[in-house]
Length: 544
Image 1: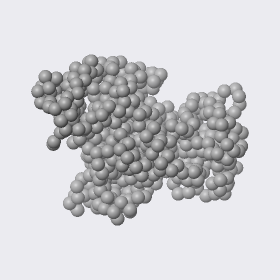
Image 2 (image 1 turned 135 degrees about the vertical axis):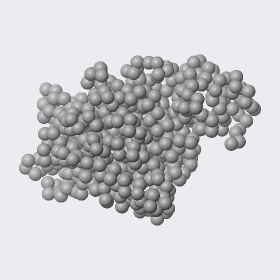
Image 3 (image 1 turned 90 degrees about the vertical axis):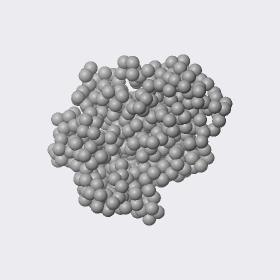
Image 4 (image 1 turned 60 degrees about the horizontal axis):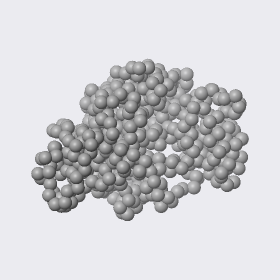
């Protein structure tokens, strides 16, 4: 590789390279966006040439840039301007909506995200929003504070929504509107639509919310980038759709995309991708095609994750299974024929089982047809039947998981899954079996801050220390090195980029973060307050 003569030499640093051949170093030499060498200052000075910009790092810690392996960049970026509905009570959520309504014009849409009815405490004495946590909210709650504005609030899980009467009317949802395929319009005992929409029913209202322009999405992503850099992120695997892809391409063309983006495409675009002959990996070092993303089921929060046995306290409900393994295999086969890997959302044990059955058929198909064994993934792998625990490793399927979900969901998992939670968010089980791990956040479902995820992975506790000093199902905890690997080496492997990303080594891209503290020598609870002091992407400082 030919390097420019202008070089950067960072020295007097505590470098964790995540390269097994050379785990520690004190200096790193960079040119043209690439790492020339890693070692000590004297050695690197001897091979540096041309103009060399030297920077004393004063003993600070340097890590490879972190990657969020499951993020919705359009929804996250746009959500920064929406109401934050992640509150302890329904009252507080409604108060925030009321504040936004005061500033809105009549008829203007009121949008928000993050409510979780399973986490709401008993309401304050104001009397608004009766009912304890666990009950889905209703349109009536919103109608009282927003009679002249349509309101649409997505749940933290992104698998449920809460709309008021104005929004329901605009969507032509009546008490007689049938449930769409794979969705539920929640109704009360009299058959009246309550305003809660589950799974595909969300689109009945969501599809009529005025769509942002590509330009506005691109602007929102540009505004979001510095927030992600400060969190230590230099790359993401994006799971949004066509508009996000167009906005990312626009930013890349303009030289404004300063995150590495592995772009997954939706299953309903598979026919178009097949016709074009689009392959996994197509693109450049900034933006490239990942996998085809399908949905097998819903989520724990709204009880739509597909389970073998019913939810505790909801004995008629085993969730929603969008398709079986045979149907999924047909999609997988079409993807494999043109070189596209698959990634499938699966939360419940039944959903994960069906995906694994499809992948087992897919591996046989790849072998029979002489096709490459691509890096297929399961997104979330949230709860498994014990018989299925070793199968990801056996099939070499990436377990793309979000550690922050464990402390966030633990109360609901205990309440609705009971003893099945022993194999929920089971990172240690997957690692011990030998499955590749890639970690992310599912932002805006959770914060994209990877240090929150690292804390969850090594403690299995919430920020307040609950449920105990040992953590929730502590046998599933990881070491910090193992968790960090899933945000770097593992994420790069899942994106077919392990030869250029995830490590600080010769001929790797110069994406790194600088920390004031060495995360390997601090109390794990201090991970919750860490941020990047500096972030470098492509050899350039983007955040100080």
